[in-house]
Length: 557
Ligand code: ADP
Ligand code: MG
Image (cartoon, rainbow, N blue to C red; front, side, top):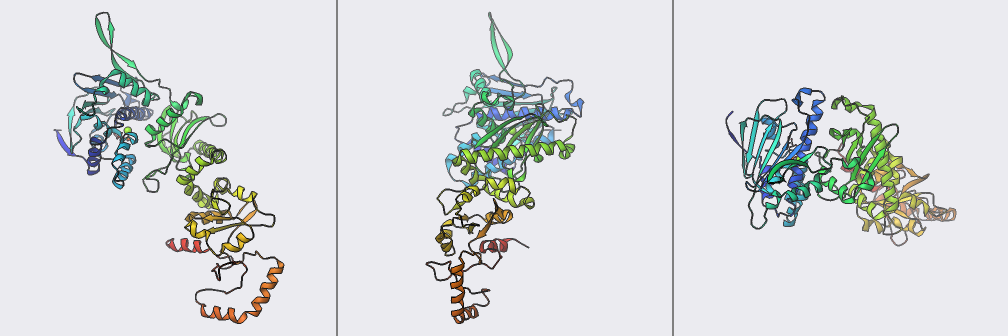
């Protein structure tokens, strides 16, 4: 094969352009990104070698090596992982395949603020972030088990060159030719102390040794030796008390491609029917691709420190699909293929167990830190409500305790049990009113009589709310009732009698109105429910509310 020059995919070019010209606040993360790719590549090889020993080529001494030369102004990062063949090189380092970068590009396009460029660093656009410090990058790589090796080279502008090379060791070696930049010098990345610091800060948990080539003086002689920089203890295997908040957050940001620290982490070790360790995170805001088909739920699955798969869907139910994290369980045999894993019953029970833990953590948060819970609710409350009516209400009994709504009681949101605790003695039902805008709901004429009675009313101001409430039907034995239903039944016996009498007296008037509006309404009635308004519309007996009607009209079919 001769040398070929290929164009970056348009989106990649745009991304690279941003990366190269970004305000260099977080460019140090390039090292984290390259090390994490190297570690992923070793993970992949280890996994594949379970069924194909030949891939190891007799070398099981997995490691990542870093060497820097101040004279040549280069840093090399190499691994003996899976490597890439020709087509993988073109696909992986020529296009934007991963959703993280795509979401990032989308956000960049939507926002016009210059300062947002800073998020590149924290976000981590993977391999491409190396162009923040390098004017040229060379990648030499050979896929495990294959003969041919390739070199990929680019200045990150518009094209990259691929050429066949000789490479004996499998895996990938990445050479960064450090960019000279007077205003933002990159020289410090060539310094031993800086590399040490960055590996400790970002990559300490990496499970393979990260060795740095350092010079040791021995008398007159200086010799080069390899020194391991990371502790290699996966953060999830450490005791909670030995991990700082910052370390948890840093791990989340680098591992799960977010640029904001998480709202909370859930670090659990479970021993019993199933043994596992899980480190789960709740993001602090809705991911950009959350409502697109790009978003994939799932947790990373490890068994005895070996990575098995990335987005294991069985481990989280749909209503907790926002949870990110990983699960490590020794209970899986290493010989299982990913396909068989899909059906594994153990996996199902592991998923159930994790679901319970998340549920409990959220309940605790609701109890102990309402402010933080509201942040969670703003980001993911809709999913919890949708979870109530999904799967024919299978999860409703768990999820109902997580609901919070605005109500007439105060400006703060209320849980259903708090509502019930405030119900008056004669109140039999939980009242609600639904519509999109909180302010107009407060002013609805239908509310008057209920409020007069001193009953609290829930405001359901999101579209999914009423579906959720109707799936629940009741809470704590108290049925839900919309204040726009016609048979509100608020009157006592005396009041009912008076109403009946005056309905008789005004029969002509009522019939007249009924006649005039006959296509638009089904019945005209006298009511006690209004105090300051003259008329109001209500929905039919047992009928669906106005808001539901609107929602139903929007549903196709
Ligand atoms: P991500 O790691 O999120 O997939 P990156 O931009 O960091 O995104 O890397 C893109 C892809 O390039 C990786 O998914 C992987 O397939 C490939 N790749 C990068 N570095 C290596 C490496 N050291 N060894 C093998 N493959 C690599
Ligand atoms: Mg990566």
